[in-house]
Image (cartoon, rainbow, N blue to C red; front, side):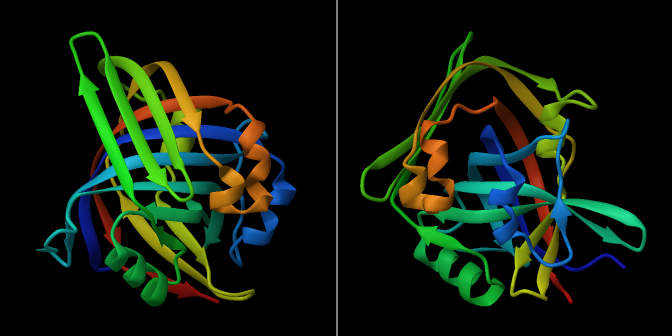
Length: 238
């Protein structure tokens, strides 16, 4: 039976930087019942910046909270449900600019949201698309991508497909309980990246466990257009 709708929104202009990491650094964050998912025998952590637009809870727009930036750090897992593998993401931290969003996510759904000042710019011309997301803790952090302006379908079997087609979210509640929710969206299109710039203090924002990313170059950087999305209500797995 399909679960009821919790949230409808649009996720747009997803800037994604993918880092190769050792599996051992992710195991302390692994939700019960899940296992690490990999592509070409590589475990990934992804820094993702995007815009939430036209957000509606149970079909109702929330004043002043419908459009906002989000930046998250996530990794990839899978969960076997009655012989079928569900591929999902686990979020180390999700940064948003609205305290009410962090409050609801943290205290009602056991997520790890943090509120920070944020900003974004999209600059579109006939031959270029530039997307930038910024967020501030001590100093401003920044993720900027320059790309060609024509979006193309993501190829089957590609790294882009692996990164963008994880349709479940898993949250570690404790050593034996995991929260599971479903995210529905069509297959995305992506832009060919020309150049990028990442200035992020990973150790300060995400903890010393991810401080090594301060000096590590991503394996790949991509820019997906995104789409309308539906988030289904969660379920506790024991």
